[in-house]
Image (tube, rainbow, N blue to C red):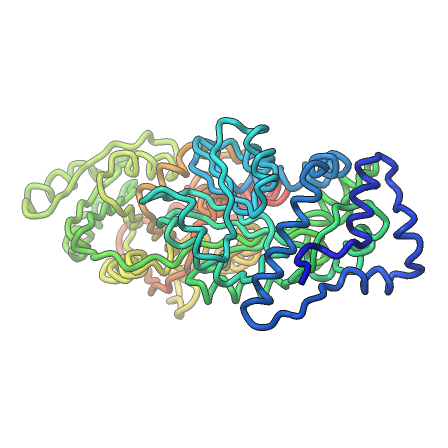
Length: 530
């Protein structure tokens, strides 16, 4: 049986594009209807079982080989759409990282993320040859992502920070292709799966029919629910879905309004043409005995809580250091830390001096001084029970989360521990941040937060880049974690009333305005930043 693509309208459209006519040729005009077009595009095969799947792969490869010389012409004709896609990838992928692009095409999307090391894989040798010519500094290879041969295209021990799976629409076995990516993932690796919204199937088919879009072979047309399920079956966890492009062609003012604003809004985003699902491989548990933990305690006038904190913090992981960051206290907090340090020589207690500006800068002082693999914040008022800190360690070392956020709003809050205005504000910002971050966060201002120090080093360059200063540090940590697509998970804590000192959150209205300003700048960066 002939395995190539049956001569049809798609090939006619390719020939038209090469001729620069932008119209469909007479072969297409002779079809008479969209139904006839769809019928001609249906694959014809006498094969059955695995042989039929292999035949579909071969049809796709031959089709790509036929259009390879004109592929860049199609990209140039739809430059606006590809620029929107490039903006999103640049937003999601940190520059100067090691990036693998699966179904890389001519390598343009690999190039736009500015990798330090780039590798591209495609199923068509002709496409790969063009990609190598256009991007000589990257490495390219030919392989089907859903076959065993995929592993042979790599060196032993190859790992990547980001994996771009650019087109799963014509991948025969998406589940196997995703499984084949796992050997190249490490804890921080993020997999970006790009596909068309299945709601756009009629419009995309029509665009191919009239010669506005590159012709393609039969497609999977997977919903985001399908993709998330396939990722889960393959051992990955979907973190967030980004949706772009309501108008794929450029119209002055109109395209900017729909693609930069409407496409970011709830409900309307569901209508976008393209979706990118960001996922991580579920990591194995790490033995806590092999790790060290730094408990950073920002304090200002908390002398009466210092010894209680040291006494009540249990051993965490293999080694625990307790870092008190004194923010220019006037009640003798620093002196009390030194006294307790000599009183408990068996504990690794350190004193760092904060700048006396705000809590966030005090916390950054402690983070920069920390030596532990895991960083943990514990507010010095001890309203969060120190005895519950091991629960945070359990969550992060088990791989359930990469950023663990304490939540005071699950269990009952004692009277006097939180004012009604603060409670209302926390609930409002919970809803706002869940939208901004793309992951559920119930309590943004709980002082207890835990993350890997390696991830802190990636968040640190973003400090001060959000358009306004975060006085508390919670927002910049959450924004940074979301920007890096870290898995954020709430952990309920029992919140209690402080027994020494007074709360620093007294200017409720003023603080609320600062938080609203922070949310606005977060919206500009996280939702309109691409």
